Image 1 (cartoon, helix red, strand yellow):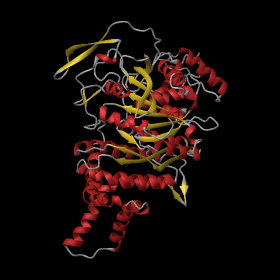
Image 2: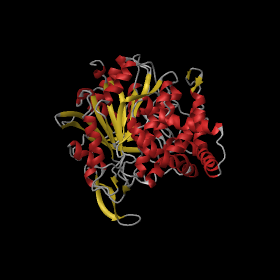
Image 3: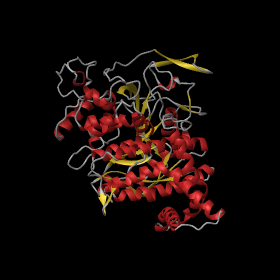
Image 4: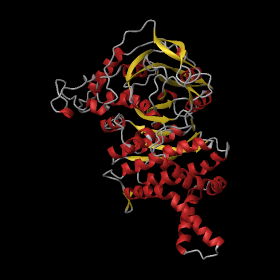
Length: 566
């Protein structure tokens, strides 16, 4: 209804090496949603100046081509922080209105372009860093803390150019750059959010778009279906969906009484950690950032719901080769295992009809570990029954009946019999892959934190069209072929440089002791002096939310924000 269409929403799209086909599909699908254009803004975050394997242009150039702006028409280049080995970064900002098919879509594009010394994938810091650019801005804004240069620019553009002040944005929707959202998806998600104020975040159903590409995509069609309509739907009964996928999730930013949710310190500080050393932590933060963010929300807000909305639908491209599937599921399975371990430590978990969600998580953890053994058990029983002619035990029949019945139940209840064929393919070809090969491969590679063959890029070039402050010249590249080096040249706009933490410190460590600006000691090192000065915008001085103070802070931020004609 009209009330549900007044809520403001940012649609965040982190991207890395996507080409024009994927980007056009995603942008046009957001444009085509029925949600009013005045109340939604597309926010694209390009993770560095990266060229996908075999692509003629970089991803930021493809974004510019699709949205219809020039890469040289940026509003400015702004300092920002990042996670990983390099604690500083710079980002270019673009904005405008995308018009196509008689519709309009307001957009903002953040391109992480890196420091002037970076030559290999400049600006690239990872998907979690792209998310933290936005979550960190919300954290500083909602807590009335000094803002970064990039924060002020984004807030100014939202207010002055896109007519959507940040304080009015109630929801943040996250989708991947190869995701096509259904035209009713935003409306259905926001309706569910407005209907139940206790919902902190929710996801919809993700369907396979390239289902007929190869046998690898065939076996994933029913798996995606049952994972949503059985697993997520069941978890949603408890209000405790354990994995909100980054490709299709909506978050509530604050409550009616101004309690900060996604941007609260407990979530932001832990999600922004740079102290990722153990095997457990690397699996949590390097391989499964979306699931880890879900885990943090469950830990921080046990009284709020994480839900599944089957009426909201999107389509995604799944791996169509066996090698890419192995890389993807290695990351997924290992991050799932370690996140389930984290969830067992959560104190308050919901209970429905005397069934504890924590008990179900423990069961899920055990099931993940014994999948290969369970499949061997089934085949051994089939051998003894069919080949040796032994009688089938009642226990075996019950186990098989439950296993198959649970798989069939979703499309029987939904009367969606188009999935019967995909179910047969899944049982014949998919079960050995998903229950035996993939778990064994994943567990044997638990110390492998690479993305494997999932995200292939061309590391040989860095176009000069993306950065007016650098010059790109040919030079020998380490390895084979020709590469480029970046040299500082030309005029540079004067900007305030903000001191940022090193890669040895986390954002929470860096700001934990800033409540007293005059403090001269670091609580971690006794009476030793601090190693660095504390950056203003990481100051964790907080207080109760006050609307007048927020408006004053916003006004000061807008005074410093650039106002450049689009």
